[in-house]
Image 1 (cartoon, rainbow, N blue to C red):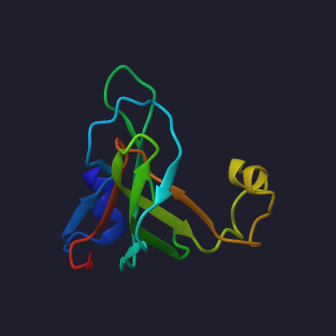
Image 2 (image 1 turned 30 degrees about the vertical axis):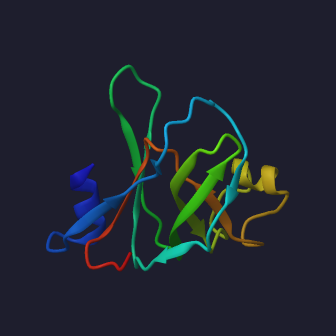
Length: 134
């Protein structure tokens, strides 16, 4: 994971990680959330996203895109009072994505027609250059 991140950012670029964090202990598995504050953009010229994979031990799928992305921290409130500081990423240029990508059927759009934004679960990681303002 770290070797891949160094490959994207360069060997001399220090980097840090951001991740979604539950600020309260919720016992609800699934619930609706509301955005409580204006999202705060993390100015990151590049990013590496690492998603957990369904294995009996820790395995991550990490990737990066050359197109423009924006990274945000967003304060969310759950129906049961849960508070979450979530990481969200918006992919601004989807023109090179496969037309069969699941996002397009969910959002009823097509490659290049709109940005695609999503939240990261608490067990996923987003690596950003350390000089990035948060």
